[in-house]
Image (cartoon, rainbow over all chains, first blue to last red; front, side, top):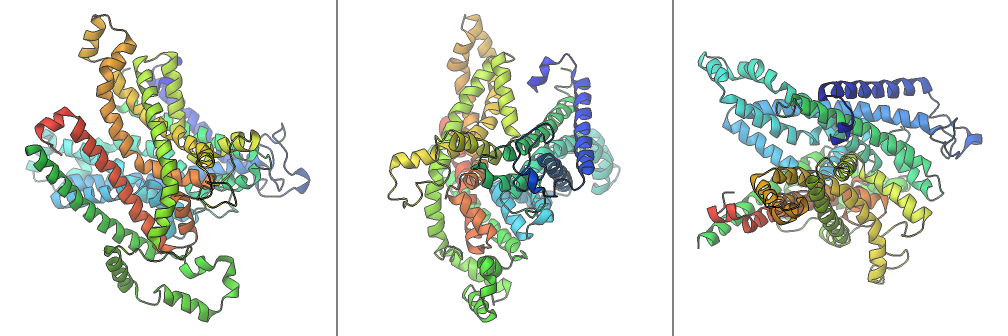
Length: 279
Length: 332
């Protein structure tokens, strides 16, 4: 990330700083949402449609609900959904990638074909299809995002393991009569773990964005849950009345969150890549 | 002669792959949809659900063939599909293909404009950024591209809508033509006026990927031997970039641009939803939301075909343009 070339730090300390920043962001969102309690859901009709002020930094909506509290709750849902979905997706990718590269040509052909199929349909159409199949809801969003984000990471892991297969220590292990599953678990897994971590971290921002998009389109959480996508979809109706703050602040916090984790992923990748780690 | 043969072989392979892919996508999506707990009759009726008697519901279910077992329904549907009949859309009450056709024409101009804009601007920005690596220009372009890569399309659309349509009043708030007119009555000027902001939204986001990719490739080209040689001859950086690096960078950029059609389609779904633009994207959302299974399946198959066409086009362009592939007779 070029933006950070301005800071007089090496990549290692910068990455640690970014990790700390992301953890702080996590902590802020979760404690903030917890401290606010139900303030984002109670209506106060005397405080309707207030523009951002010191007391209400994000303003209030058409029912007098505090937008800051609602945004924090929305972010909490986004982070939770994103983390679960990205975790599941990366898990699927790891499993399929390992299987494709170790369990013979037939399995490899099937998994490569599955990857091709999953990548052949536009992402968002696939997301809509899967969440429709699950009948919507938070579960639907998580399944849809998890089931549509594994292909690219599967490819990466498969390629990595294929390259590993011809290395000497694995050949040796095979000569010693170890089973493919043993080799996969004891020799290959530790080697692809860094790739897997980076893949997981880079999946995370994508998962958050796609979950928000799906909710925005109305396929996700019910309108009563203050998810970021739902908040923005609701605010659409009030934009023409000049309540711009309903859309700007929640969206901006979402962008900042996603970008923070994107930077984190990029830094960790550069650190783990032998080509760039000494920059 | 060799050239011609490889081209025919290439096309045959592509057609075979396409047919396998289509069969797989159709089967998978049908299985997925049949698992849905959404009752199509309930979803179709929506708020009118209380006014409809059980007998009427049965008639609707029978008309849609819902009284047959799922496996039989699948084979009926698949055999009709092979003959080119995608069935009836339940919410529009007309053939799925004609709904997709009409909506796609509206979407096509939006996607085409956005795609062209993001391709041209993304490429130029990428080349500039890569040529002057680590300059202020490069840093601001990279910052923009990285930020756009983590910004939701629909939010950009909402912000632009608030600023340009609501506050400034420069562009219309919704739709693809003035409210109350039919699409035939609207003039070209009106259509373009309605198109500008959604297309701009889509291309603002679409620029990010192509810029970052072109930037990497340009940096690579600027550090190459031929660039060093040109520099030794006294060529300026900008001259090297546009006279020597450009051709090498253009090819991967074109491929990426064609491969990004899937993302473009997804972006169009979101942008159309924000701007209430009656294209294929908005239809996808409606079909999913109101349980129109035939239309949803039709759109899944159509969008897969669309993405496949984009990728094939990229391959063909590679064959035609890249001398390395052209001379070896196509190693794809």
